Length: 67
Image 1 (cartoon, rainbow, N blue to C red):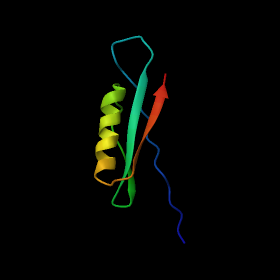
Image 2 (cartoon, one colour; image 1 turned 135 degrees about the vertical axis):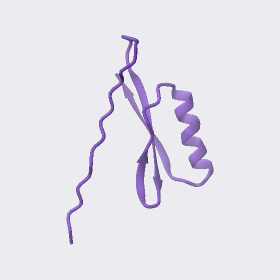
Image 3 (cartoon, one colour; image 1 turned 180 degrees about the vertical axis):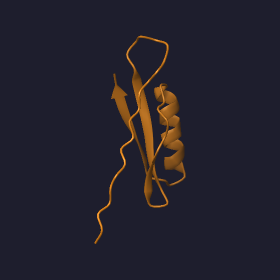
């Protein structure tokens, strides 16, 4: 039994605004592995993306980072 290393992905917002950086990641399972979207600033766009996967029968969820 071999060990599996998980690669971590780190995201940083480099926007022009100094406001709080609320970001959403959409995650879904495709071909047996977890896929991650690019960071999305608009919560409603992220929700639509997640719902589109769910409507296709693809397991998906959202992770919300608030600053």
